Length: 91
Image 1 (cartoon, rainbow, N blue to C red):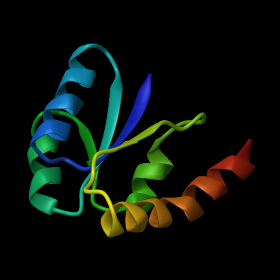
Image 2: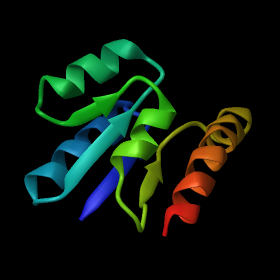
Image 3: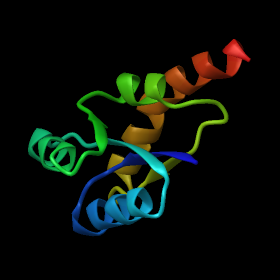
Image 4: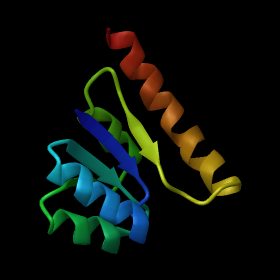
C-alpha cells in the first residue's frame, strides 16, 4: 500500500520508517527541509512541496497527517485540497 505522510516530527518520522519496514511505500513531506533530507537518507521518497507529494501518490490516495492541531492543521488540509481535487477528476 502507498501512504502519504505529512509531518515528520519524532513520532511521525519513526512511524514512516516502520511503515516502510513492513512493506508500505511511503511518500513523505514536511515544511522543514532538514527533516525531508533526513528521511531521504533512510531511502524514503520525500518531497519539499505538497503538490509533488500529491503527484507521486496513486489513486485511491491515502495521506496521514501528523501535524499540530488548530491553524497548522487547517493550513495543511487547505493546501492539499486543490491537488486532491485534480486527482479525483483523473479517474
